[in-house]
Length: 146
Image 1: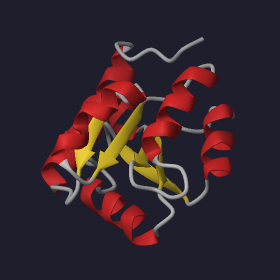
Image 2: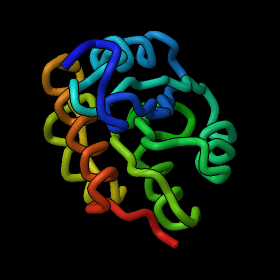
Image 3: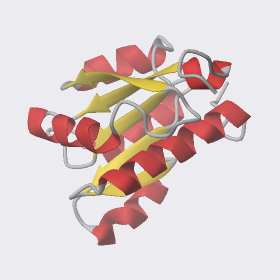
Image 4: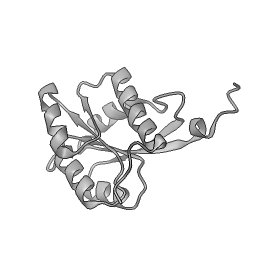
């Protein structure tokens, strides 16, 4: 296959919201995932935000294909925000929550997150996790609430 041609899936651009009050955490997340987490998915466009209102507005407007939320964000962490999004927004995008301790992964169950990443982020695991969630969206396996 030539680089100019490709299936529609390979040409699609996904919008991934990255939320943390700390710019260095947002940068670590975007760097670990990269612009193309898997060859079959197309490119990722990151929408970085530092405030909860920005997350709620973007998700409510349907501008996001995936939200990645910092579980350690202040004053409100990504886990509580994930739960709020899942319970209050129709057609909520899938959510990945990042945590600092592997032992905190259980909280993702409570937060209703679709996946969890643990800091420090491993680029292979981060890209694989994002690719898996986006593939599940594309296949219809991950259906947003209506």
